[in-house]
Length: 248
Ligand SMILES: Nc1ncnc2c1ncn2[C@@H]1O[C@H](COP(=O)(O)OP(=O)(O)OP(=O)(O)O)[C@@H](O)[C@H]1O
Ligand SMILES: [Mg+2]
Image 1 (cartoon, rainbow, N blue to C red):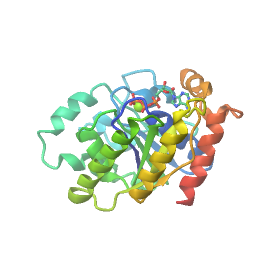
Image 2: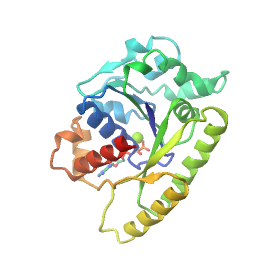
Image 3: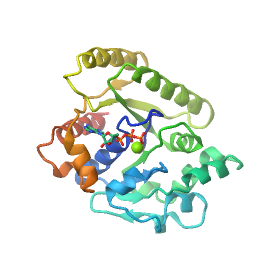
Image 4: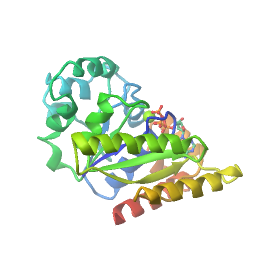
C-alpha cells in the first residue's frame, strides 16, 4: 500500500506523521519504505541522513541510478532520501511527457517488496505532490486545529478530485489527522468538531488527535524515533492513530 502524507499548508505535522508511521509500522514488523519528496529534507535529516552526497530520489527519478541502489536501510524502515535538487527536478519534469507518472514508474521494481510505502510531501502543490498522489492508494491529511485549516484540507480534496479524474481513479483519502493539539486553546475543540463534520461530509474519517508534546522536537533533534520516548503523549497518540489506520 502506498500512502501520501499531504497538505500544502506548511508546518502541519506532515513530516512528523510520516516519520511516526514509518517507525511504528516498522516496529510492528511491516516492511516500510519512507520517501522524502520534500527538498527541505526534514524526514531524511530526522532519520539520520546528514550528507547531500548520497543517492536520492532525484537520482532515481532522473533514471541515473537504479532504485534498489538508492534505498538506504535503517533499523525500523528503509529511506529514499531527499535532495535539494528536487526543486530543479520539479522544473525539468514540467518539460516531460508523462510527468505525473514518473514516481509510479520508478517504484515499480520495489513496490511489492514493501508492505507500506509512505511519501512525505512539500508544503506546496507541485508536480512532485501530483506524482505522489498518482502512485498512491491512500492519502492522510495532517492539519492543525486552527480556523484556517479547513481551507487547507478543502484544497487537498480539490487536488485529489483532479487526480481521481485524470491520473489515479483509485486514490482515497484515508482520513484527517489533527496534530499539535492543545486543550488549552479554547477554540481547538470547536475547530475539531467543525473538521470532524467536514470530514464526514467528504466521506472520510477524522482520526484520533495528536497532542502538542515537546518530545516530538527532542526526538527529531536527536535523530531518534519518537517511539523511544515511551511515556511521551505524542508517541502514545501516534500508536492509537496507527491502530485506527490499520483497522481501515
Ligand atoms: N505533536 C507535536 N508536538 C510538538 N511539536 C510538534 C508536533 N508535531 C510536529 N511538531 C513540530 O512542529 C513543526 C512542524 O512539524 P512538521 O515538520 O512535521 O510539519 P510539516 O507539515 O512537515 O512542515 P513542512 O510543511 O515545513 O514540511 C516541527 O518543528 C515539529 O517538530
Ligand atoms: Mg515536512
